[in-house]
Length: 412
Picture: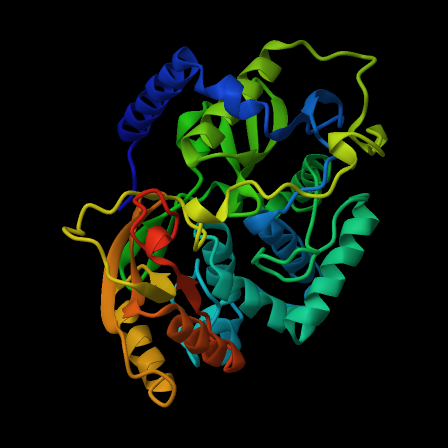
């Protein structure tokens, strides 16, 4: 159901209290040292602040900003329409988390796919749009990289439409600021997609992952992102007194610090008067040595990051899960997790006779999801099972006992 203004104010005050506490504890300065960031004036392109802004980084779901750009371009050109019905392919439906849970053969509008892409960072929606616009995701990724070059994103290469991990898919804070500015400049008629707070799924209002929208006065977009490699990313825009700023944070260690650090740098930027001699975004040079000249950092270590979601410790487990495990994804609907688990067991019946099914409830950026697993395996069995699933183009990840039962491991 819709959120009233009083509720939004209450949430903003609560978030601001947490941010103040983090700053008082010294959490933000330590985290900020390992992040990349930039803040620009959206109208002029003037750089207000920048830290490691041209260092290569993994974009994670910030990739979907380019998927949205190309979709908006197709809408503007009349190639597609917002009310056009798209049929969900099996490939799109099988995309690993985060997904909306679209079913193969289901029909959804382009508008709905865009809302799912932006609000819920849905990988299945990203693939669906890519297939509609380019025929398949590989061709769409080529289109994405070509558009990035045309916009001046000199350090960006795209390999898929969603931001799922690929070591060759890279960007920088500068490049993401260029893309955000282009989205605001080129498609004002579609920009309100980035300010939406909910997307409906079977009558359930699923909220956005972008907590900055509620935490910062004047915030009205754009997108979060997370993978183990990237850490917690955010591209944001806000307008106050007719002045619009765009900020980028790459590599925050958790979601709270991501929001807090964006709040800090955007707040500081709004307090600075516009400078006539400011360096322009397009003129910001790429570093050739030092940290900014290096390849992307791998932000979060594998022992605390197995699946790729922002989570809190699961309080539903009363005893450790046994042995090695394999996980087949996490879903907003428990019945869907059970269905995926049943299908996976059918696929593995000829190669795996061991293992106990388990559905583990997790909290992902404020939203409950259900992970589908087989537990109680030996290492060799887990590896063999995942290889079999991969050969069938199905998602599978093996978890060792330490990661399986680590309350901070991000598969949880």
